[in-house]
Image (cartoon, rainbow, N blue to C red; front, side):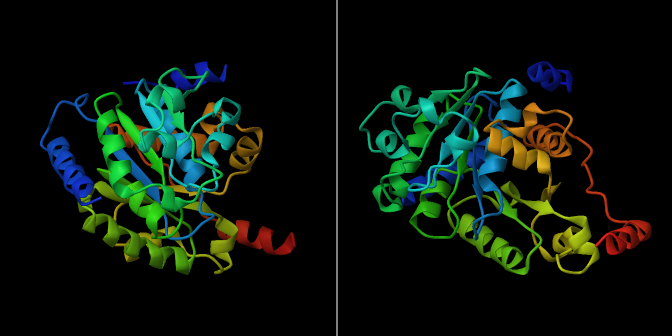
Length: 299
């Protein structure tokens, strides 16, 4: 088992659908862990919920746990993943180049200089989502599944072609939602589409992100506990709004490299959970009656 010392040290297509389903079943039947990577689609029905931040930090956390990880930016046309990781200067080719066979994987993959077991493939900023097909994405990822422990795909918002490409090779999924009615409603819709693509229901879970206790106390944001009761999906983690995340994104450095941050600790917890370790969930603190009074009189 890996301890927090690791993180402190660092501080210092249809065929695609069938294949994904079969691989997912083999993983669940106890196939050797290093035989196939678990492919996670990180998705949501709406933008701005923090998918890219979560993808970057989970990838970094899993790598720090000693796993070999590939991150793919599936949001073609916007290209954000390599930017918030501070790797854009190394980006010369993109996922469209790779999946179409224009260049080899080795030419497009960026090896993170901070953690040698973490690789990133950027999205194209000049093309649009029509330049990649679910079949291409599926075949590309399946060819790499024996080379990695985890492949995380940062899906674009919505349910159009970009989303279809991101979930085509997926064996698992994390649906990112925020404490808003629209985001909550979209989570069920996204889950249904993932199941239709062959992802097993038990391999789909939710992360509730950007929780602000004072908004919940003022009844202008949904309570994560109520959301969990409404969703017919397990909730892997609740992540509070954390200024350290904002600062880390601005500095282009994943927040998990700042072990003192609450969000960093939660990301590490999620990574350990994904990796099969039983960990105690970190519960987002709710505002007490005194906290609520102080919040009201401080305005």
